[in-house]
Length: 436
Image (tube, rainbow, N blue to C red):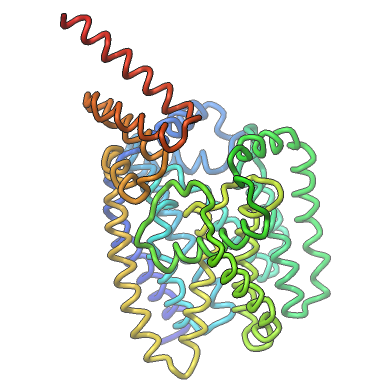
C-alpha cells in the first residue's frame, strides 16, 4: 500500500473511533456555565469579523449541524470536530519523528483519552483545543518551511480581537520557546532567526494588554497558592496532571486546594531531580521523547508560574501536554517488543474508550453533571453549592439548605453559598407566611 493511502486509512480510522467515543456527547445539554457563553456568542454576530476566528466557526458549524444558530448540539459538534482535527494534526506531528504505524497508535491514544472530555464534551472547555490547534498548526507549517503562514496563524491565535485577552492568547506565548528548543535539539541553528517574529508578535500583544493581564492575575490569584511555594506547586501540577492522564478513575471539574503531604513532596522531588539528571541520556537516546518532555513541562508552565494566569490544576490543561503519552507509545511501538506493546496498548485503549463514553454521560444534563461532580469531590465547597442550586431548581428546599450549609462548613467565607442560603431561607419563610 502506498504511503498516502496508508496515511488516509489511519486518519479515517482515527475519525471513526473518535466519533464512536464522543457520539453520545452530541446529545448532552449546555451546563449552567455554558449558557452565558452561548448568549455571548449570540450578541457577537453583528461584529463577528472583529472577534476571534472561533466565533465565526461556532456560528458556521452550528448552522451546518442543526440548521440553527447557537444550539447545544451545534456547540458539541464544534468541539468534536475541532478535537478530531487536532487528532489528525497529532498524527502528522508524530509522523515527523516515527513510522506511520507508531504515529497512528500514538494519535489514537490521544483521540480517546478520558481526560480530554472536559475539553470536548464541556462546551466551555474548547479553549485548550484551540491552543493545540494553533500550536500544532504553527509547528507543522514552520517545519514545512511555510514561515509566513506559520506567523499568520500564530498572530491569529494570540490576537484577542476586539475583546479582552484570554487564556488562549496567553498560553500560546510558549510556542516560540518550543520552536527554539526544537531547532537546538535538531541542530538547525541557521533557522533560529526565523523564530524572532513570534517573540516580537507576543511582546507586542503583551505591551498593549498589560492592564487586562493584570486583571487576569488579580482574578486568579485569590486562594491560588494557599501559602505553598513554587517548587511544591510545580511538583503538584506536573504529577497531578500526569496522574489524571493515565488513571482517569475520578475526573471532576473542581480541583480545589493544593493537598500535598510531606512524603508525596519528597518522592515527587526525587523523581523530578532523577528525571532532570537523565535528560542528557534521554536526549541522546530519543530526541522525540526529550521533545515530548519539553512540551509537557512547557505547556503546563502557566500553572506553576510566578504569575497566576491559570489554576494550579485543571483537566483541560492536560490536553496538549498529553501528547507526551502519545510519544511514549510511539517510542515503545518502535522497539523490537512491538507485539507485546501493541497488545498492552490495545487493552489500555479499550479501557480508556469505555471510560470516555461513560464520562460523556455525566454531561447529559446539569443535574446529572453536578451529582457526578459531588460524588467525585464531596469536600469541594463549589460542588456542594452547585448541588444546592440544583435542589433549589427542583424545589427541594430542605436539601438545598443542607448543601449550602455544607458548602459554608467547608469554606465559611464562600460568598456565593452564603447568598444562596439567604435567598432560599427567604423564599422558604415567604412560602410559610403565604401558607399560614
